[in-house]
Image 1 (tube, rainbow, N blue to C red):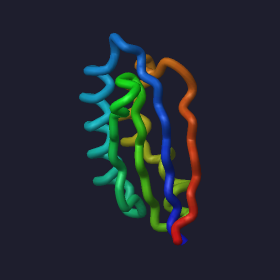
Image 2 (image 1 turned 180 degrees about the horizontal axis):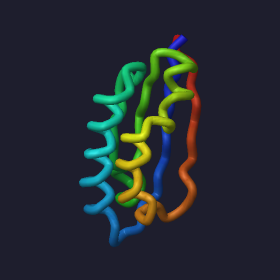
Image 3 (image 1 turned 120 degrees about the horizontal axis):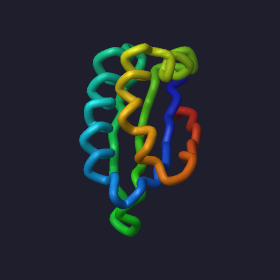
Length: 96
């Protein structure tokens, strides 16, 4: 069964450009390194400009469990840690 994720991220206003640039680099790493990741895409809210949604889908629970464990993912995430204004909200979804 596929696993879907919607991650909501609130970004510090002065970090938006830095966040977008570095997140796109992270997304490229995820898509290249994580064979079980079907998509990993960033979207910016139209009503809340500092709020982003990451839409993700994985082949199964095993692929999702491996997601944050890849060394390349961990390294690509480093420039993003100071951009986040508050803890992310993560919603897990089951594919139908």
